Structure formats: structure tokens, C-alpha cells
Length: 89
Image 1 (cartoon, one colour):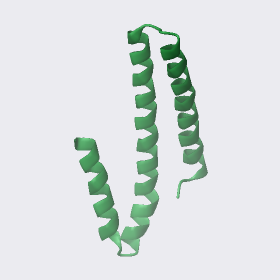
Image 2 (cartoon, rainbow, N blue to C red):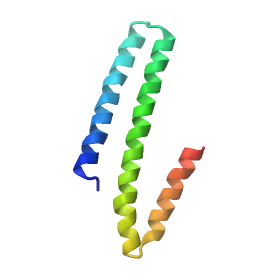
Image 3 (spheres, helix red, strand yellow):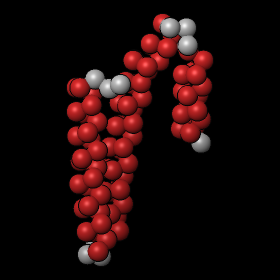
Image 4 (tube, rainbow, N blue to C red):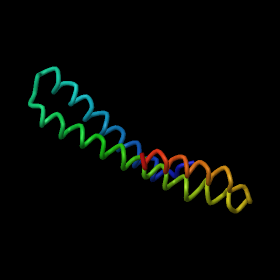
């Protein structure tokens, strides 16, 4: 479960990314310069990565920590390994 401060941060990042995505769509519809479009795509990717990092940080600080305290860490460790495998591809 995300804390309210972090939840607000993640939501703001997603709302910003959504706005940028709308801008990218308009840029494509208007036949804007490809490099400008590519730069905006990179900006959205950076926002998504940052938001994912915040979500995973919250997961580690709360869900994983709680699982360790309860002696139920095996499932959470496997989840983290699966996420790391995705990032390393």
C-alpha cells in the first residue's frame, strides 16, 4: 500500500506523462519534426521509469518489509527477482 505522499507523487508523474503523450499525438498529427517527437517520447519514458521506481520503493519499504517481519519473505523475494529480470533484459 502506498503512503499518501508517495501516491500523490506517482499520480502527478502519471498525469504529466499523460499530458506529454497527448502532446506527442498532436505532434505526430501535425507532422512535426521527428527529433522533437523523439525527445518528447524520451521524456515520457523517463517519467514512467521514475514513477515505477517510486512504486517499487514503496513496495520494498512496506510490503516486503512486512513479509520479512511475518516470516513470509519467499514470495516477495521471488516478485523482486522477476522485476529485476525484466529490467535486465
